[in-house]
Length: 187
Image 1 (cartoon, rainbow, N blue to C red):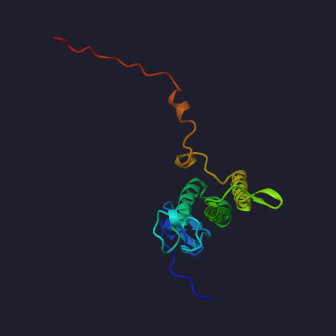
Image 2 (tube, rainbow, N blue to C red):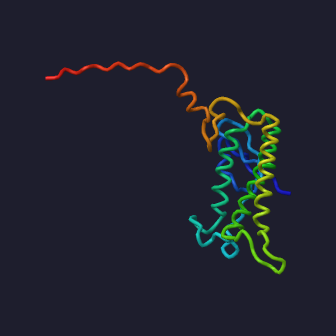
């Protein structure tokens, strides 16, 4: 077994997404990031989205990289940095599930929902796997919620995807401010 390379610097965890390394460094606030998110090389001949892929088609798959980068950004922005078990489960359970999800989504791209065989109409098994993976992610996140893994206040308490749900209620709280208008001199 080889020796471990240099330890990553603070705040560089997003730069290491997709590497085979388990320890990614830390977030900008100093939270250590340990996760399995290895990204495969671009598969020209076997990729179902190769013809429509907007990224360069060499090196690591950029679709997977962008997907996991966003998952990393949202999840590490919401998780409580003091809860070590939650960070462990996020990096070694939830993130790998998202990696599987993007693989299944790529495989399902352009696939028909059903097909006809000798036995009649059948549902595409790739879509069944897609639903099972989404359910596994949902269950894992629900279990993280049940152990209090997510921050409830402050800027991290606002979901980056759906925003602050109390925003409009807070706008109309209290009494309206009365405005005074000045009359201009008219000639």
